[in-house]
Length: 515
Image 1 (cartoon, rainbow, N blue to C red):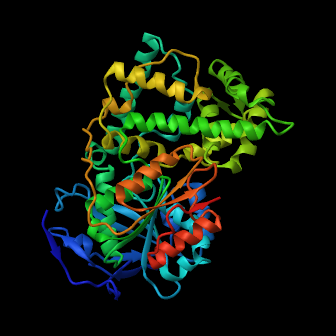
Image 2 (image 1 turned 60 degrees about the horizontal axis):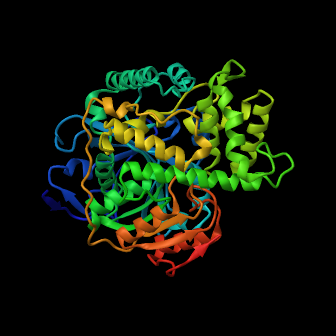
Image 3 (image 1 turned 90 degrees about the vertical axis):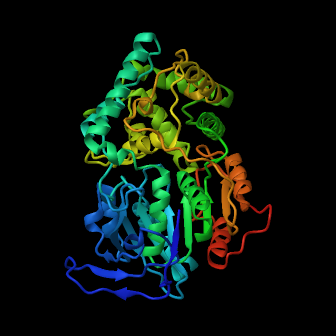
């Protein structure tokens, strides 16, 4: 690819006159840094910053955006297909909290998923950032990746009612007829995604495209180099950016790493083992309580959990006008593995289940699926599937699938539903567009980056962070705890190290551990 070096305008801002929507301030800070040939109009575009209320897409984001007086929002225009820059364009939602003084540039964040809203994440972190040294030095920028949240168009496959119904379908029958039914449902889901969202959009929602959007964003925000904070899947975006644009990186903080050296099967099995490790820690904690729903012997916790949840396969529990399914109970438990703060609610939910109630587990599952009190779902679940289906190779070999199911049950026995392993094709096997898997390459010319990894992380196990730090030649900061991601979540040891790196580009000493 040819690159065209354009004049750097990172240090100045132009307020452009025109006819914006009332209350919109048009601003042009780009182009900045290196600009790929043929994309000049995107890299140098003006952004119209305005009130964030119209960008809210769920009840919680509506409340969140209204409560934050220091934020403003805009949309960034990018090509749908970067091989056709003169073709259809789409919009990426942006949220900003301006630096208070001595601005270094923008700190762009992504909370993971794939499919989570970076705008909501930035708004949630805005007070924490504003009260820290980061708030002085950086514009805090959150973005909704293409297809997600306030970005246009959205990846949307199921209606809210259809999503509710889908959660009641357990798909635990692994007989030939049960597998055939599951595959038929997955095929129908893929077809519905193509019909509602559009094949051209589904073909261009992968990490490859998000990385390109991130570089357009960098320039339009006026930054010659990117400063980025990625959590979970957001570390995959950051690593992808490092591979595609190593010379455009100023600083990367990658917290809760996806291991770039693992294939999808090994990553899935490692995650299963991570959830089991977190469940074991929960069980040990629970056993010290007189009210532990799993009993006083942690060695029997797997069986106790299964005995509580498996009856839901045949008899879901009424929760108001809804029903708590086996899937919801499992999802609620997995949600609680992400943080020790959710262990008490999980124990309460399991205790409720003993009494044929399911309010707490339903609430945990709703939180995982991002369903609000009015029954509206965000785009996260459909976007998650859409990105996965274009980011990863297809798994269609039934022998491999059967082995994966067997290995996952062995890695996470608390989640074992008691059925024989099944080799059902997932929705990706029927996806209407081919995967756009990126060749993994060694990264050269990258400045030092900071990887943060948590010893008891259930979703992205600690070893993945060790691997990513080695792969990128970066520093590793270890946090000893049981949760998924930690930076800017209140641990002063981690936060201080992260702040110093982002502001002064100074990595913590090798071997640094926080707790």
